[in-house]
Image (cartoon, rainbow, N blue to C red; front, side, top):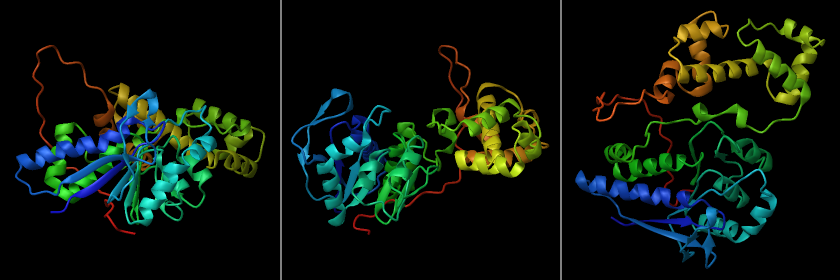
Length: 354
């Protein structure tokens, strides 16, 4: 079997964990495959750069090789802080942008991790393609690159040889897809368990915290949102909402829609889901009780709305995100066994696919 050549592009300010995360998981997979007697292709991994020296985020220096042809080029993310001048940062990374474009033209599959999507988009590779990135920066990516179809709920998106992933840990979702494609589902599943990585995630929706999203800065919609938050358990009544702000229902829908990009009811539903997530994660309150407290006539309607927003039913969300009680010292945890879980894997980029 021929080796699969992977190059990880290191550049000033990139995250070291995203440089080494995928290669390290492939090491796990190699040992798992050997233990299972699976014949597998080898991976040739190199850290490449158009520069002679690279200082990553946090001031760490990494050794690099010169750019050379690879089958898959991985582009890690960088420190996109509120104070960062993104325009200047991308301008300073023109050598990397050119290298990404050159590798793609040569037939390499390109994979960006988190906000590495900004570099991939800057290289022109995402125009007309579906893509994702961290939910925190998805709107910024969409505004800067209007020709990119940003899918903020997706964990991994592959479109014609170019792959983008959500934030940080989504690099492992991609790596497991690569292992699944190259080594088979058994090796991928065992690798995930050895590394304590979830191999059944399909969406980043459950991780979104609206409180951390950039504020739009529109007073009318903010006031309406505060009113809806205070009356979160009351029956939704558009006429009553409009009357509270001394406007017509038509004006309410128009002004709120212009500022918030959604209807008041859509915001209320998302606010209820946000509140429900907190209650599910921090209390033993039943799903039926939570639904009633949030103004739903029956639990099934609430569960459907919750699943539409998060990708999981309320009970599944609680099982995943609620912290169990601390075990006493020396306690042996009962192994509940594995459960079959539905999967909706996203295709892994095939080297040379265009």
